[in-house]
Structure formats: C-alpha cells, structure tokens
Image (cartoon, rainbow, N blue to C red; front, side, top):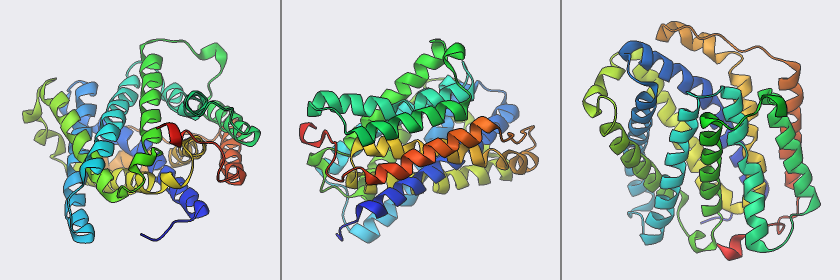
Length: 325
C-alpha cells in the first residue's frame, strides 16, 4: 500500500468532518419526519434508523471489499472493527438519545470533549505531558466549540442528557484510540470499516427489535420517497464516506491531534444548518427552519479552524500513546 503523507491524512480527516457535520441537519430532519409519520417514541426511531443505515452501508461496502481486496477481513480486522463498532455504535445511540433530554448545542459541546479526554488518556499511557503547541490547539478548539454552541458555565448542569453526551464522548475516545493502536497498523481501513458497519447494524438492530414496536414496524417508516431518499443519502454521505476516511487515514496522525481536527465537525454542522433545514422541510413535509448566523458562531468557528490549521505544525513525531495501546 502506498504511504500516505501526514498533510494528506489531515485533509482527509477534515473532509470526513465535513461529511459528519452535514449529517446533523440531515439526521434531525429525517428523525423528525419519521416521528411525525409514525408517532413512535423518538429513542426507538433513532435506534432503528441507525440499524437500517449501517445495515445498508455494510451491504453496499461488502462487494467493494471483495472486489478490491479479494479477501474477507482477517482476525485483527474483526478485532479492531468489533471494538470500534461497540464504542461508536453505543456512542451514537447515547449522543442522539441525549437530544431528548437537553439542547442540541449542549450535546454538541459535550460530545466534543474527546478533544480533552484523548490527551488526558495519553498523559496516563505515555507518562508525559503534551507539547505546548498541542495544548494551545486544544484550548483554541474547546473555546471555539463553546462559543459555537452558545454554552457557558452558567447554563451547564449535569442532568441525564449531559451525562449521556459525556458518556458518548468517552466512547468516541475509544474509537479514536483504537485507530492509533500499533497492533492494528497493518489492518485495511476498508475492511475495518465494513466490520464496524456490520457490528453497529447488529447492535442497534437487536436494540430496535427488543424495544418499542420492534422490527416489524420499520418498513412503515420508509414509505415515502422523501424519507427513503434521505436515508440513502445518509448511507453514502454521512456513513460510508466519513467513516472510511476516518478509519483509513487517522493512523497517520496521533490520536490527540485527530481529536483537535475532529472538532471542525462542529463548524461544518453549524454552516450546513444555515441553509439545509429549509431545503429539507418541504420534501419531507415538516417544519424545520434554518438557523441564523451569530457572532458566537463566527468567532467560535474561526477559533476551531485556527486550531485545526495550527495542529498541522505540531511535530509529526509529537505526542502519542501508541506504544502503550
């Protein structure tokens, strides 16, 4: 396999954040439309949506894996993909479930806390402090996310939704660290991504089967062209593309640096929320207004982008817990 340069890997991770960011208004519109069509509990709707989306993604990716690599995943592909599936799948359920208990801005802010958790874990594992340049980047993006989300110490409290969002952030940390582990350095990002998709589909499928109306009610949620079409867009744009880029390219940077880069997702989510909701509302038959640009959004987005740009100048050999994983 041709070696990938670090700058190219960083650009690929930023591209994955673009796709992840666009996912926020898309998935919010889809879940709202399915809730209004069915009247079912939003948590069950969220779970079945993840099951369907990742099952379709696994089905699409399977022939690609076989045609390009001509072999099924090996033992370590299954091992790494299984760890990521359990962590990311549970994290997604918690993240989306948290929206039922607290505001989207708070969930978005607390979910990004992996930018702090990853370096803290690395401090313990590597037994050394992070470079000052990396600390500066972390502080920049953390301040930016707080401004972007409109979160301040005065409006934060540790309720059910906040606890779920923090738990999701911890699980996403496991995903990020699993991609740094040296024992998986030779794994195929494509095969690991397929295993991940299949694992999340299984995890959320069982959860959907055992809760709410069960799997029998799922087909009725996709009876309109708008809902089905949007789900197919999510399969490609918000699932296959970003997770492959993340799983394939992150190994070229340290987990702590990747955590900084992933915060750019919040910028892309904010920008896409300025125009996508109104475009989606009419085809889906829902009330979903565009968000308005605010000074906090502009300044916060600028700080996040500054952190993502500056992290490229952290020494490539910099700060990693890889030897301990």
